[in-house]
Image: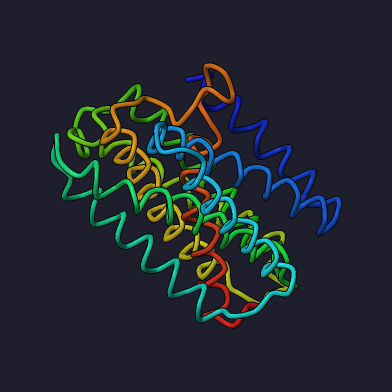
Length: 265
């Protein structure tokens, strides 16, 4: 359990520091994470296909960073993120062992994680980046930790055994419950500035918790289809970059879209 929670704390702490240092350190940190994540997926999916696929995918991430510096096209963000996340969510709940490796190959390399990190790079350069980042990162981290603890000690009912045999409904419930105090924290820090009620913040964080857990399950789907436990060993025994960002890449874009839709940003 410490192997998952402690590295997550370090990642969140480092990201918070870079974010607070300004837009350039924030962009550079996220860009390095994005490039590393794309490399992890490429190394799994295309080990014998040369650097062509890697170059295309990395180019997509760099293009997203450039677009992020000029911040625009909210409708495009909603369309691409919605399509990508729904496709992976449906795949996660319909997956059967032995199927889908080839179909997931193109989807994973072009969309996962390139599109997700592209959206985060985009959001990181907008004027009101802090609220969706804080809500998405804090919700994903706290809810993942709560789900892990509850699933480890109290989990008896598997959520989706073919995709992730260790995830349980008890863990899901704990993750959703943990969204309530996160909503209170967000309201305490940002409530006056964005004029959202405490109930609205709790509702937003509840949705982020649910969607972040779907993101975690989608990552498990990709790894299960490829027959690996972690995306890479870039962080040693703690896995790779995508293993730490799998929930956040779902939660942060949704947080921005929800807060924008509610008129907070």
